[in-house]
Length: 135
Image 1 (cartoon, rainbow, N blue to C red):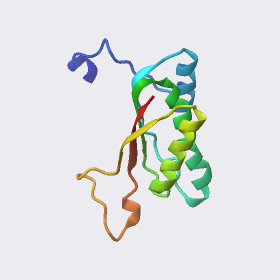
Image 2: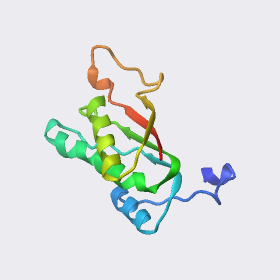
Image 3: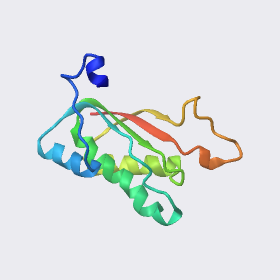
Image 4: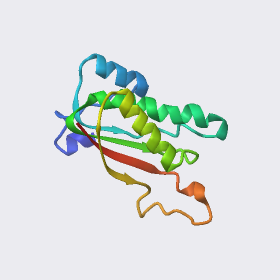
């Protein structure tokens, strides 16, 4: 409905599926995009999930990066408060390496001004994101 109201219905499509399966399917079809946005739900909800959840970000980037056209952009976000910025950045780096892609980080960011972080509650700084320009 929103796409139609904005006059872009012929340029966008929507699909409901498991993200990892959809990324693999798109790669199998040879799909390539100028911009790929990966904004998953929290992969890490408790400390026991930290290792496998963090690896989920690596897998996400490994599967998404091949879908980005050379010179295109990959945006990857995390809302897992137990995954800190250095761990998130490391998983993104490893995912790019696994996908045999290179690029530059254009921006590392967190929450916008409308989502304040409480100085006494570090878990409120759970939002993190990276915008990458891929070769």
